[in-house]
Every structure is written in structure tokens, then in C-alpha cells.
Length: 148
Image (cartoon, rainbow, N blue to C red; front, side):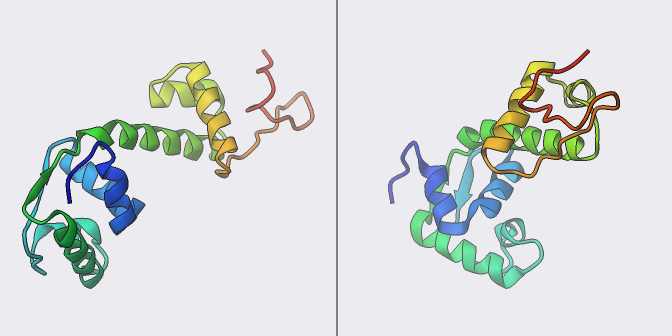
């Protein structure tokens, strides 16, 4: 199989989103060599499925069938991976009850970037807790303007 600009989507279709994200995180943007033949003792077996080596081996076998002896650039997925990690960090902190400004400070992004990420999370259907303001009834702070 020839590697195209959408190779990470192809890998995701072969081994799944979670395993693809593990590969991107493990390589940290570096190229990934896929062996010609799978081996149960190969490091990729553990990277693909740390909890189940047989499942990791099956995924590696599928990768070898499609990309055996090829080197895949993983840098394209690094940006998306970092954005997803940041998005999930924002959601996790919001669900713990932190304010938008507290989240922005902890994650290292602006107030408006935090609001935008929470809005996107809601649009994607991800679980985001609505925080009650002390002096007002419950409002949706993701969609309503911040009160000072």
C-alpha cells in the first residue's frame, strides 16, 4: 500500500483510534518503521495494546499486511494528538469544577481558547459539566457570556 497524506486515517481504520493515538504518542512525531513480518515479542505489540499482547499482535499483523517494511511519518498526527490531549484536559478540569480562567491558566491557553474548546466539546457531544454560578441560577457558561 502506498502512503498518502491521509495515512494516519488509514492506520486508524486498520487498528482503531486508540491504538493509532498510542503510536503517535510513542513516536512523538518521529517516523515509524513497520516490520515485514509480525513478532509477538516486538515492542509494537505492547505499544498497540499494553493490556493484551494477543490483541496487540493481531493489530501488528494487520499493520504488517498493509505497511510491512515501510516507514511511516508520524509527525502529521502529532499536532492532532496534542490538541486532543489539551481538549480532554480542558474537559476533565471543567468537570472537576474549575472555572474557565483556572482551566486556561493550568492548561496554558487563553480564556477564549478555553471557551472555544468547551464549545467544540459540546458540539461533538462530549460530556461537559455545566457549572452553577453562586449568585445566579444555573447557566450554561459554555454558551452564555461570562459574568464578572
